[in-house]
Length: 367
Image (cartoon, rainbow, N blue to C red; front, side):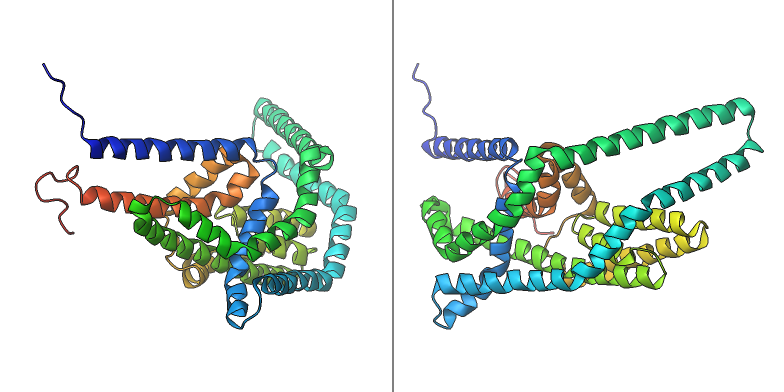
């Protein structure tokens, strides 16, 4: 008996699918292996992507691409430097005071904890009280030990030091070359695309570009606005180092959910240690509740909009998943990459709904 011939179209589709699947797996493995050195390159690519429209505008004014890249990048770095110079005296003074007063805050927190234990002693049996003390002592010891190990790793780890130095010295260089050659790189990648699907890939790439640009530019504005809001609010409430904590909280907003929670927890703990009562830490917590409500309901929808189009549960999952696989780099790239995956998933879903796999008879029915 003659064996049936396989459909050449299906065979070609399977080969293309296997090729792209292998390429994606290879890319993920490479990122995982090189994750300890990729931070300055990712930062440089983000800066180049952010500044490319400005360089394009200068090119339209008949400025050479190299000169446009130099002017735009220099203006960006000067702006960052000017902001640091303006804030440096205040930040340096507050950081120095924070370090010097840390033992005082630690003693105040210990006094509050002792007072809490005194209140509990009147309400709990002695054996339960002793177990609570032992458990609290063990947890505090583990926390101190873990913090010491993290701090030691940050200060002595060669990779961490290399990342800091590379962010300072390598990121601007990477940003310049990527910004100068951005159009050439895009044209080269476009020339490598399979001609049969080039138009479809271009359309999806355009959607991805809109998603990423909307996220990066919008999120930068959100972080700046909330940093100013928290810095002014914490300073007005009389919190020591309110400027430092406020700008740090605004910067951490870049990490959805986790950033706002971390900044608010740090501010409340400092207020608790400084004031020694429950009223003013409650005001600090209320400040962050209002800030997070404004950010989630008004600021982010207005500045970022629905371009990212990700469900909050998917964002939380992507943060945990990317962080577990790629570390701190994964946390930083989780939302942008998830937005890209969302664009590709919606495209694949649309193709599936219009294919015989969904409805062998008439295809997808409009909803």
